Image 1 (cartoon, one colour):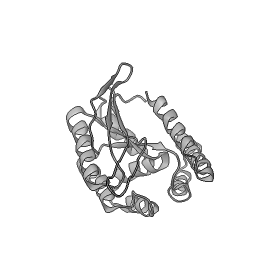
Image 2 (tube, rainbow, N blue to C red):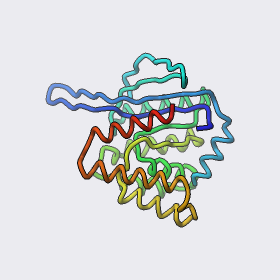
Image 3 (cartoon, helix red, strand yellow):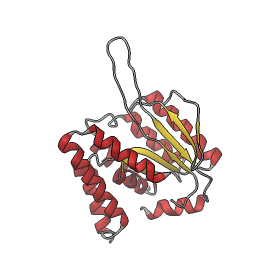
Amino acid sequence: MNDRNLIFVAKAKMMLVYPLLLALIVILVVSSLTACDNSTAGKRASKSAQPTIVTPVVAQASGSIYLYGEAHGVAKILDKEYKLWSQYYHNEGMRHLFVELPYFTAEYLNLWMQSDNDDILEEIYDDWERTRSHNPDVKEFYKKIKSECPETIFHGTDIGHQYETTGSRYLSYLVANDLGESEKYTLTMEAIRQGRVFYSKEDGVYREDTMTAYIGKTR
């Protein structure tokens, strides 16, 4: 990736133990490189249309990696996550936010970031029904990013969840905009294929391996 400042957020695992305690083990990985010109980041965005804090680990090849504990749909964690991103965005010039969403969902969010309404976000939110992300606090998290960090560019790191709804809708958008031969179309089809493989077997190891492979490509 040509831009020099990246932040990567991804979950590794979550465990719930009842009734005495709620143990959550989730990893958000934030990877940063040197800063990129804000106007370039904004241009790229328009074309595409938590918190136990652990000591930072320095990666010689790609900058710094920060590990954060998080769980989906928890208001105080979302608030902490937003504050962290806002700090990176405003104080360190970061623009690229890697999130635990499918490729096509992140790209659809990028279109929403450039729009003057919340229609796309509402569609995505409806597609999240019966998941932890179908939570008003999650919706507000994204709205705050759009309002306060408007040049944010999302990058999805997960397999193709909601491939029959969000995935299909994003494919239709690409075709309607003469992008049926584009890299975006190819990557969307690959994410959909991964989603089909995962849900045909409920193979958690496959999902983790796929996400790990993506992480390797970004470093």
